Image 1: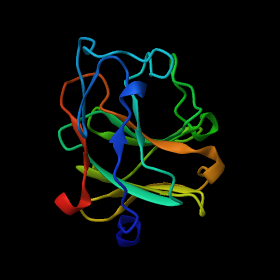
Image 2: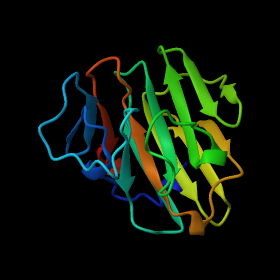
Image 3: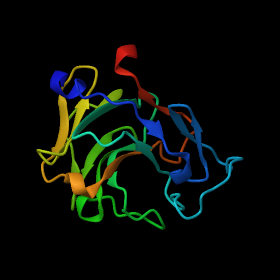
Image 4: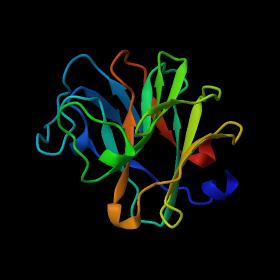
Length: 183
């Protein structure tokens, strides 16, 4: 994880891609039952599922961490910039998504072509490492540096992927992008 952390980037949330009921406050993201009082970019936003994209720049290797401690449900990973944002989403690599998902506070899954339940502890903080040259997307428990999952058939640089975040839609508790120096 130390090698991954050496590629830390500053991630900003792209409000224009946010589902209308996601509230963005700096680096924090939460689900609200009412639509937010902001101009909605109908063309670019996720319209059905509670997601938002982030921006990192275009480095060959990037790393960021997210605090998910209070959440029982979330999705984290990366998405092709061109992946579908309308209607129900197929969260799998063939459709441009490399993500892991926590459901009901107990089932951590890698969303591959077939969902794969991961036999690891539930992390409070997740580190995400995108390595274009190796075509890998790797997830770590940021507390102890242990491996959660690695997609080895990851995106290429030409795929232009972006960080993807979802606090899911069952409670208003936030997820927060962390600065490693603050962890």
